[in-house]
Structure formats: structure tokens, C-alpha cells
Image (tube, rainbow, N blue to C red; front, top):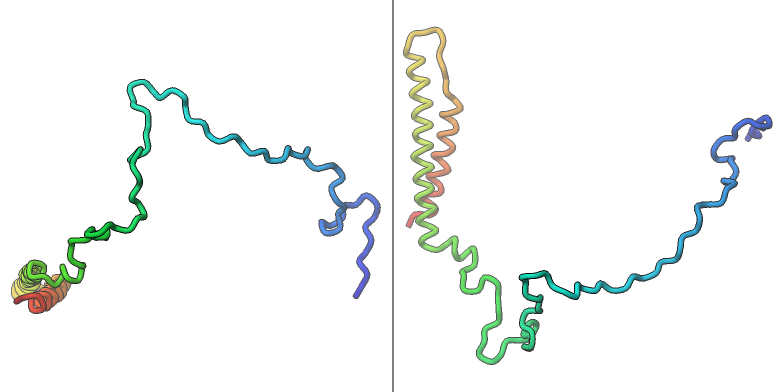
Length: 154
């Protein structure tokens, strides 16, 4: 290791060799003193009744077990589970109708794309259109609709 060269007098030193800040830090702050609790207004606004806690004067039943003959509160009680609702007859017939609708619209896109392609090819013009997006999209939509219909019919 080589010894570090000494700086001439008055030359600034690198940051790691500077001396501590010669002044005192900012004046010390007062220690934390807790504030008094919030005091509500003594007079309510005009035209509004004073606020009261719900169920004032009655014992609260929150957190208490249900009494004899009472059913416990369950969120969504009385409604079927989402898988049960999905397998119900009404839901199945709605999904079957959705499948039929997809089959119809998919067939229309497929037929329209094929029609445009055939018309432009048979026109004798050197330029023709192959509507492959409509053909492919309609085929995919038709197949998806057929699968949905066959799965949910019945």
C-alpha cells in the first residue's frame, strides 16, 4: 500500500476526510406533550337532532350467539351457492341460448367472409380479396357456440 499524499494547507479535503460540522444543530425541540382528547361541540347545529348511538338504552346483541330457535346470520343465506346456480335448469337453458346465438353469428361471419372471397375471385379482376379474418373468426365463434350449446342443452 502506498501512503496517501498530504493536501497542502487550505485545500479542500475529500468528503470522507472532512471534519464534523462545527456549528451546533438546530435548537432542540420541546418534548412531545400529549394533546387533550377531542371534545365535541357543546351545541349541535340548528335544525339537526343531537346524535345518539344506535340502539341507545337497549343491550347490544352483536357478537352474541343466536338464541334458541334462531338461525345464525350467514351472508348470502337463502341463495344457492354459485356452482349450484350455474348448474340450475334456468342457467343451463340461458347458456344453451347463448351457444345458439354464437353459432348463428359465427355462421354469418364465416358465410360473409366466404361470400366476399368467392365474389372477388369470380369477378375476373386481377385484384381479389380473401376475407380470412372474417372466415377464421366466424369459424372460431361457431365452434365455441356449438360446444357451449352441446354442453348445456338438455
